[in-house]
Image (tube, rainbow, N blue to C red):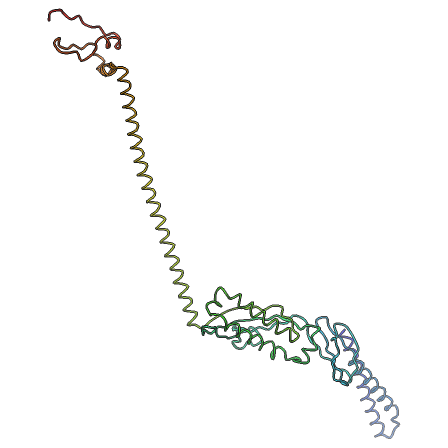
Length: 345
């Protein structure tokens, strides 16, 4: 659609060139005393064509899909509401003028890294001071857009200066206010997300009041002074050493507890074995006692059973009391023959 306006402008330019050519013919003809009426006609036609197509080209408004046009009425000084969206429309030259604003996603970055952001030549990070007096630096990127329905408000308040005169000061000011309510250590650690969310929330409200939509606020980096960063690093190292020491102490305690439990288990096992052996011996003695009470000759039998294999007979003096009951032994020992005892010995 931009080609139509360019084409009409080109035709207008040709018309003005024809006008100048006609003027040239008039001058030449007049200097030679010839009739210059044809030159006047040519100049008139060129002027009409130039003016007509110039007005027409200025009266055609072409708005791209990612743009919006704010129309200003020069007669009453008011803005046309709502602004014109994408497409081709007509404006009245001189009586109406227009300003094009982008409604696509825009980005504004403030960074400490060289080559990044809108001010890449210097450290442009947001600097603030925490509640405990530490200097904090934030690298921030803001992604936003102009609300198409609020383009008139943007035009009235900021025109095309909104990035440097509104977006940048608003982000930096709100970030400093939020940083001042947190301790530096919290911003460095567990509450970093909370800091970002608080800046995002306040900036969203502030931008909406000026005709902008905040899509995203990104805190890309958090840094501190060299001294504070070193102190944080040393404390982190000390904390890691403390945790390692606690882990080692716990490991040794577990190992000692395991050794102790093993010793206790072994001692308990030995004690239980002694008790079981004593119980077994007591039970065996009880059974032997019961058997001896029921069989008095059993001990004599066991004695003979344990004699050498080649011993079948044992003699004792006649005047000694018998240690054994030979009758019982004869019954118990197969092949045992009791000797005849002489009457007078």
